[in-house]
Image 1 (cartoon, chains in turn green, blue, brown, purple):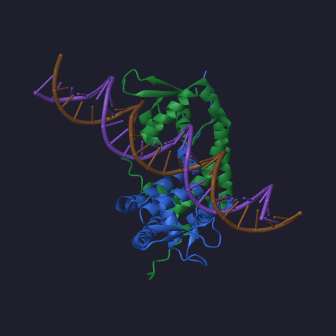
Image 2 (cartoon, rainbow over the protein chains, first blue to last red; image 1 turned 180 degrees about the vertical axis):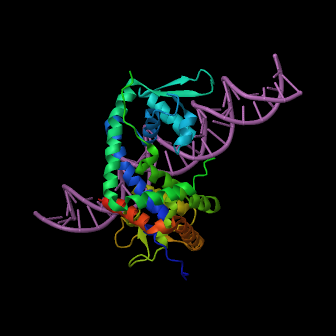
Image 3 (spheres, rainbow over the protein chains, first blue to last red; image 1 turned 45 degrees about the vertical axis):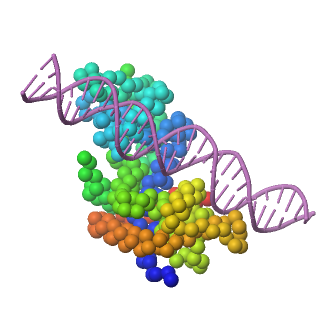
Length: 153
Length: 153
DNA sequence: TCGTCCTCGTTGCAGGTGCAATGAGGGCGC
DNA sequence: GCGCCCTCATTGCACCTGCAACGAGGACGA
């Protein structure tokens, strides 16, 4: 009645393992900034990019972020709207190209990041400690997976 | 005006890297079974567990799956409902404990898995090929991250 | 200047998600 | 048998998400 059906162990399936590891490692930090500041992961990603002293200019458009972060533009757009509503960032039409919306941290957003970034750095260090001597090879493997796949249109 | 603000590179942040890698590796496979069979990732996970010749018994409850897969029970429940509607699985009250819902593959579901599992195995092999000699260390690192964090209530 | 085509960002929609609440049922002491 | 408390699974709700469609604006040639 029941034909064989090949054996398959989900716990050994790399995409699944990555998904679980990503969820677990993200959640630990995400919970902190969710509970303390009401910030979600998409919002966090946007904030990080606004906190960086980008190449030349000091503001960033939605498209800039979309390109650098693995997020759809609608996701970026909505995260930005929430951040604006919360007073962490400001939107402004670009003077040169009025299709662009330039995003910038407000003072409040700046203060927020002054708190969040150290938390994130500390967490990264904790993860590295946890990986111990497997760190280098692990990150190298992650690089291979990330390099091969992101054709990035 | 603008206070320092520590430097932070999202691209080097492990939780972020994991999230992107997980998304990319999952999507490649997920697209296949989504387009060809209309199956989503949560549904796929449920199916995999039903395809396994579980310890003793041949059927599984929602709770069994919830424990083995990193998914909430509501997510499992809804995935199961969709699979039932699609005719891939059947639900039945457990004779002994009537609170339990026993899930089992239908013939159609069985046939589906006979197609899906080889695809997944081939994909896993492709990933392993891609990782090359970094494979063992990579998986070891993943193990460390997975071991340390899942307190699993 | 006008038309055409492209890009940027937002939004409508249908559907998925987490969380808390719910209801059905079981276990156990009295 | 009856309460009480626990477990299983489902569901209501508010929210988030991807995708496609949209409007506004820019680039460029005729």
